[in-house]
Length: 165
Ligand code: CUA
Image (cartoon, rainbow, N blue to C red; front, side, top):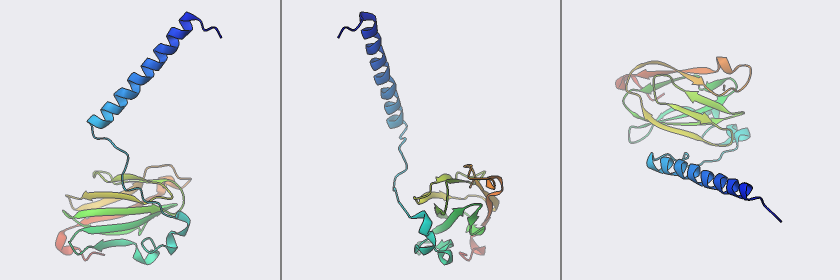
């Protein structure tokens, strides 16, 4: 088979450019310590209500023995449940959220809490809320006609006022 010289050259140029670009991406990712979310945790989204952790009675805010807080929530069209939570200020918080139906995202403006909630997986965010006040949990992935109205309320309360509920 005969390949034209010019064509051969372009094949090489394309290969070299691809290698350079992938190399730049890899170096940038390594240099900036970017990596995919760790702790891949699958869950059956259609049977959340039957799971121990995401059963309705077990959702909400819980205080751990070490004083930190675990928030367990379900995202479902169209809300985050429970729809109102109270969380103490200046306390390590672990949010664990699972979707009961489609892809959602949760974003709390003015904080660094934001994650996708992919059906089939548990999403986890660790953070601390430094300021008291009312915050909204907003859905930031289009999930259907009610997407714009998908939000819940989180109140960051002074430490003493929190009963962990
Ligand atoms: Cu849920 Cu958009």
